[in-house]
Length: 410
Image (cartoon, rainbow, N blue to C red; front, side, top):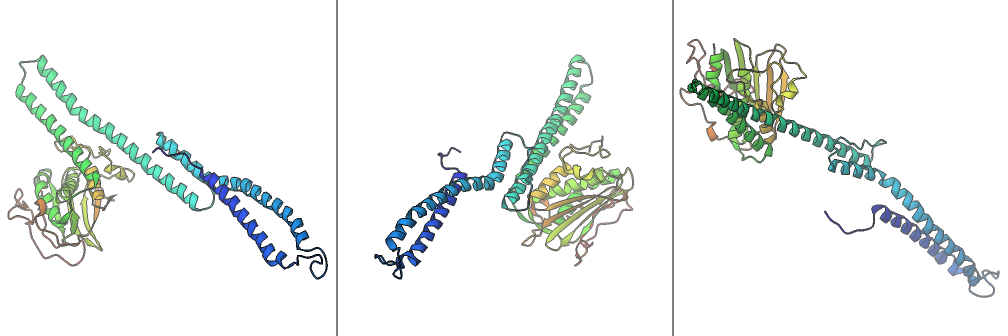
């Protein structure tokens, strides 16, 4: 912002140092006058009858005092200018780094050496801020590039299909329409996922008390047919886990977690286990699934947008757009929670979500996360040997089975 020109901090500090020395010198001269010279008699006999008298002492002392005051003033200005420059040198480096960052060079760092003090603490905090800003900007650039590519792909496929149909007017238009519908559906899903990701990253979500155990049951009911088709055992157990947040976003978070666990699983006889409970002041949700082994260095990247992992790509109707865990991560952050991903030793992934506990009682059925409806649990509907749904009192221990389960067995 525009500002009027003023004295620099270095000049103000210099004047302050010089003024301090001048005041100290003046006080010293005043002490000499008050406690020494004023007791010297001002007559021809002087002190104790011995010359010189006050008049001669003042005439002798005053020029020397004036010279000393002048020297103190000059010394204060020169020394103050030098000391102020040394003291403000770290600020100059920080200002230079800030200007470079403002010009777009986010890779420059202050990296101030020396022992810890206020200026080096400020420099370290500034470097940390630049690290976060650079990481965020790089992430946004990757996101924009990946989003552009993902959005361009269905449009390019649609144009290719239309070009082929234009060259062959007698072709099967029904098949063309089916393919166009599939491509269009994928583009719509991608757009809705991007909008949801943008909404959750803003962080200003409406909050109400929601029971995460009911949200898990609702997500399991929705994805039970998918689990049955893939031969996946889907088990949802645990105690009530109240949390404050958006019921719609929390349901999407849970749905993405369960769908991700179902889709990225072993080809047959896989399992997905969802547990809810309370641990301390937090409501905890864990989603654990079987699957191929995952490299430990790959796991942290799975929450990045459009990151599907080297061995986690699916080519069927549930291939996804690579935003599932990114949306989960964004929703968890918007609710002031934490998301932990850990590879299982035998293969698969263990996802743990911790959200701050609710300050009030959870409302059953808030925004579609209500209690299980009679007959909604489809355990054993497609497979007679599957375990029936049950509802038992919640156990006192956190993360222990107690609420009803949803189980789809092959």
